[in-house]
Image 1 (cartoon, one colour):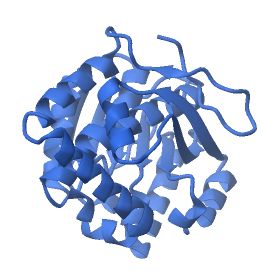
Image 2 (spheres, rainbow, N blue to C red):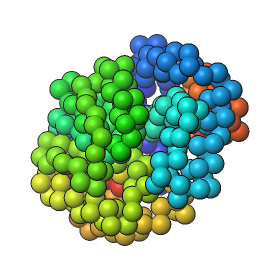
Image 3 (spheres, helix red, strand yellow):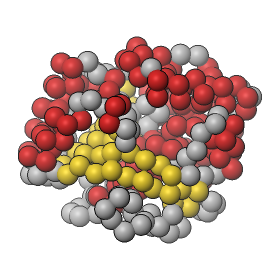
Length: 271
């Protein structure tokens, strides 16, 4: 399994993320996801869920605050079987590029964890002894995150809670917020930002992941300025991937193309 550093427009091309190795934890997990969700719904039902979610993310992002992305079995299955693996691969590649400097975190808090893929990816890269604590507003997502931690052999817990007021670790810890900040109201978003900056001052590492499109993240400029002022960085990512067969079929059937994963990130090392 080749390492896969992130590929930024101003950086040398990274190696491909290859997920076909049967010894890879991702591949084993994805097989388990298939068995779990395709035993409940047909491929066509999941594909329709992917299309509905894609429409929400691209065209009607304001509805995400009402958790419209988790309404109905089809969208839930699509979120768990389609988007979660993509988020895992993306987070893993970004963490491999940004996080190796310094000792790995012993504890990672995943704010707005969804079904848990981003925090789990970082915890796996951090190695044995790292635990992940996921927090989300959806009870269904929390249950799925707990299942995913077990399936990925990650030491993790998840609970329902207020995303803006979660207890954030300092020295020896990390915080990841993946595709979540958009779901917060302005006051809660600002409260979370101040909490993240304070966690970094206490010695924590902070990673934010969001869509690469600037229209999707109108608050990004102010967050970027705050992170860079505190010693952080702002990056864009284009990461080539080779997806598992079922994930590639879902991608094509839904009219999407994820041969390359894209995102923007904010990274703040310990102060």
